[in-house]
Image (cartoon, rainbow, N blue to C red):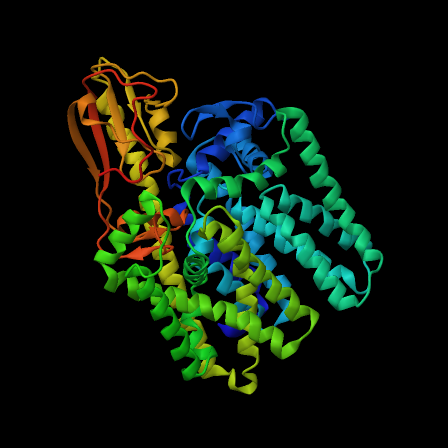
Length: 569
């Protein structure tokens, strides 16, 4: 098996990727998937105006150009898939398998320069909750990272001796990465620092950065001419504005939560830790993880001042043992990630180590302290670099890295794969529950004489609109007696309906079978949004997804809703 894998690595990695992701090809659209689908459908009819439509996604109807904070390249890719294969979930998910394949195979090729074990690096990239869950969506994250990886490949391989066509291709791929997700811009200073460290001086290579800079500037000018504001500069303003709205925790709290998300996202850093670190280092990392986990669950470190943060803090305090144990492991794994990046740089002190270390540390700083929220999507770009660093540390074992240790490495990766697949399955079940609820409510509203309304967004909104229900516009909509209002418990930007406007109420429950969840404020899990908790995913008895159905008794309209709430209760 070892000989076969070494001679056919691309085939093995392709088979592993398909085996991991094909089971989720029919899953429902989830979280921000609808924004990409709707923009793709707009592109099919108006290719030069990707965001030229309006929708209700936050509080009121707004232009899509003001709602979205992502560039449109992933939407153009989805438009091509939809125009050819249709708009079904399966068609789009199968189309988005290709970027994941490019990411995994690209990691293998890039890793060949940095490690003697590129197959381990690629496997440690694929077999993570961060990649398997993100690759099950139709959002921009894995496509951006695929462009990132291949831009790095062409740049590294084209730098010495200078290969103009490689560097030009890299420049185009840098631009493609940035125009898929704005974080891709960070690849420019990263590759510049790497090149300067490797070449020791400026050279003709520096001119190839003009390609991505020019294309990104052109995109800014193009969107300004279309929408009256540049989309890139608009996204830069969004993070501080959003932090001011939802409130931001202390620097220490952000550091601990980001460590938790990074560690949970790159699970092989935890499963391989006993093979990479001396026992005293393992004990120190777990002890620090324990301190951080206890401090968060006991409320010694404030998660924020918002009502939602206080509600989450109360929930995790009530189950502090289970949440504290999970935080100990995820924070400990996050510490291992930063430690391995710093240790590699201190030991080798070369351009390759600088490149990998800055890749990890820069992503961590952005995700924890610059982005508007901490989530696995913002941590995801460091996963391939961590995979390569793990393989490099195994290389350092020298002759000790032989058959017995190789078997342990394989078992550690299998364990990571099992947990990652489990988390991806739970996330798919959560996504499918919103589609199931919408189908049930569709049958329910057929008997309604009044208008059927709903609050809440994400994938739930996509299926509710398909079912014929209308989203509430809190600045325009007026709900009349006899109307039906549906409010999901596990969603964002919902307003509680005051008692005086209710005629009756009932609850629809969709049970979840998996004992793990990616989004549940009552368990402290906030894979897509740390507003829901300090864990990327949480294990335990997952509560049913609940949807509150209210019959309107008295008219309610703009100005009569109470303050924006967190989870409904």
